[in-house]
Image (cartoon, rainbow, N blue to C red; front, side):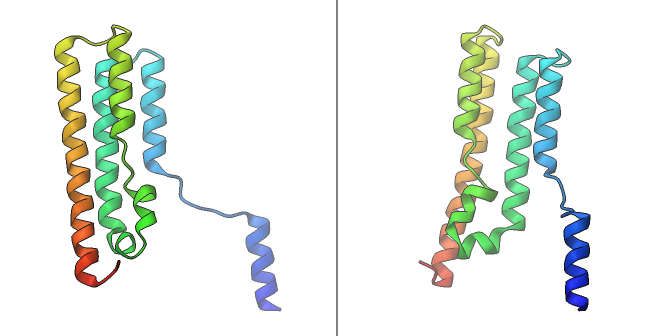
Length: 133
């Protein structure tokens, strides 16, 4: 009877879960860019840094789970550099960034891609050491 009451209370009150702060920050950044509060170059820098920092924190938090279950890598530490390079190319074609800004953004996106690759390589080596195949 207690279990039924607890279950009903939980179902009626709704599932309270924490919102994804990364998604909130990305939406705020996109909103600021669409309203013209920040320019495209600043938007792209902040977006790349935000995605990179999220990848680092989630990779640290879920490292052990990603060792055992490889499919979690796409969830917690996804490859976002393809999207970054596409955003940079679109901004260059639209004429929203200069050539110097373009090369700076490409270098930043490449740096974050290499950092993710290093994390993935470390997980692969840890997986091998622990005997997970």
